[in-house]
Image 1 (spheres, helix red, strand yellow):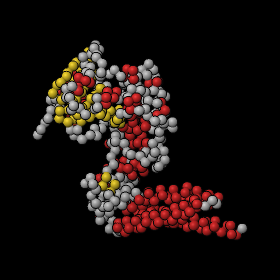
Image 2 (tube, helix red, strand yellow):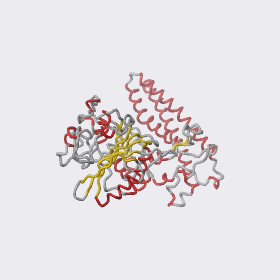
Image 3 (cartoon, rainbow, N blue to C red):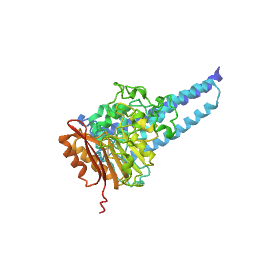
Image 4 (cartoon, rainbow, N blue to C red):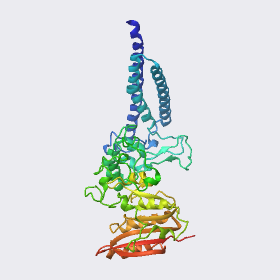
Length: 464
């Protein structure tokens, strides 16, 4: 009996030693943090308790604070943690080779109760930002104003500037990398903190609808997350390309939990409770297949063949800004033109539908600057998005952004823009202010009080 208990007794001593070492590390870090809080005066000024948690303020007035020694000590602790973790990991691997049941139980205990918390503590300690007095330049509170608006640890870690590890200028010509979030995130603090509340490395919640709510309300761009995105448990291979363009995708390839419908058939325009109001009928391929290729009685409807004939061989890539399932991009793909389609999931899986058709969805809202460089697009097409509801100033910023990415000689295709008759002159000015060449221009009645406007405009060279 004495011999059988000896290995367990030694292992118990090893565990006790690890606990003592971890305890000393926690005490060391806690004391250093308490000193920083006391030095900054947090115990005296409650209103500033959340300010500059990751920075040391007014170092010049704290002559007794040896910043270099603290950095050296933290680096030394991190190195010891690295070495200790390697030893534990080596021990676990040796246990894995053993068939002894008691060793397997101890291995599981070490992995779950020691290695994982130890690793998280290690990473957390590495992410504490201490200014480097010998670095390129010290950080100040002014460089990261948003950090003091949030208490959630993961948000603060994300928006904190990340200094280059080598202490030099990186390939982008900067000293550090700044992760950005939309300024409106401050006004949606509760929602953003809920979105960023997760376990690192675990599965994310199925909360894309919360993310989209943040995006459309101006919290855009959203911070990245360090959790694993969920996918359909029954995901199937997509259809071959030629087949996928004009066939509804497999229902099993979409997570339907946050939609009113549970399959693509339910998204038919015949279903009054389908969950979306825009783009009526765009999930019905028998209706979509005739768009932009068949003759229409409406003078504001242009055919793709007629448009491409204006610039033969010159239209190769473009952007479709609207609400839909990618039918315009599908038609252009048949003409060997690559179109990126913007989409939000406004009550239906528009992005999934576009991607499953073999096309390129761009998940972006009206709030965001287009992620393309200047003078790069051959064509911009817009339909079903900008109507008489849009503010003129917002529209002005958007049109200037479109003008930025459209190349000289590129085409701007305004497709069935509609508004109230009395507002038509205002919107016409918005489109004509850029002095584009008119290839097509058509106005058609939509109702008693509303009209359609379609136009095909060419961007001038502007060689300056």
